[in-house]
Length: 159
Image (cartoon, rainbow, N blue to C red; front, side, top):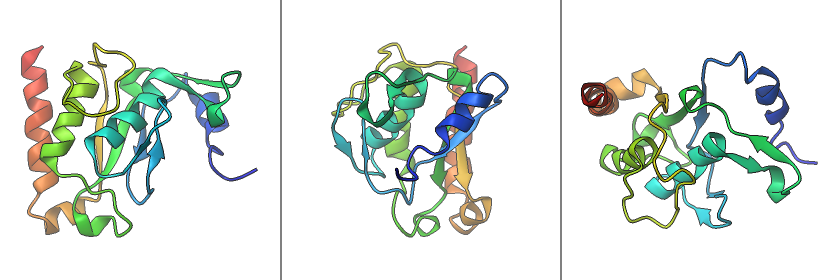
């Protein structure tokens, strides 16, 4: 076998104790969504398709008899590069594009992309984002923290 999916048994084993997991959505190339389509990193479709796998559960290796169960939405975070230079192999996504993905993931508001979220209502308890790294964010005039802090603060005001 290959190394892909090697962490799944560990994640499954601690899922009831897991506070959160932030999955690296950069330096990863493209990814195949649960709809069987290939999505390029750095796009809203990629972010939604990859997050949806943990939020909804997915067939491991496409095997319908081997389902990795969904994590609670408050356990799932997306790891993003804070600046283009922080991800030399790609995956930087602009805040404008990422906010489209977040609105779809959290609120169920589609943006016209190809991937269709499994739960059309969204996942209001979705945990958030992780930055690689705060040093890159500082070098990039705090674009990451300024944009996403404002976004997530706005969500709490809507509750």
